[in-house]
Amino acid sequence: MKKMLLAVSAMTLMVSGIVFAQAETPVIDQRQMNQDQRIDQGIASGQLNEREANRLNKQQGRIGKMEDRAMSDGAMTKRERARIGAAQNRASRHVARQKHDRQGERHR
Image (cartoon, rainbow, N blue to C red; front, top):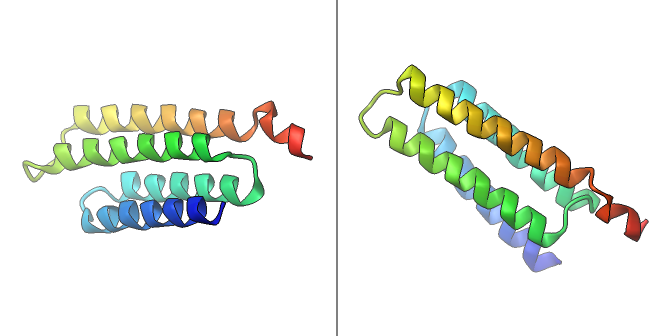
């Protein structure tokens, strides 16, 4: 369990480093950080198991890569911003579903 928390924390710091490097998109960056915090909180509270957390963190990493590609030419178009926003909406729903599924009830 400690190894998983360490791995998730390292992943969060890595994603956060990428986020701070992109000052051009503060709304997207803040939302990514909020999602990472929600995942970390879910791990700490036991609402997320290792497999769920890994899947959610990978999804956050893919969104980060989408942002990197969108910013590779120096600017983000409205279409790119909308696509990333839609991906963040999906990720947010996935986090909520996984945190509130019935798996955690077995351990209480």
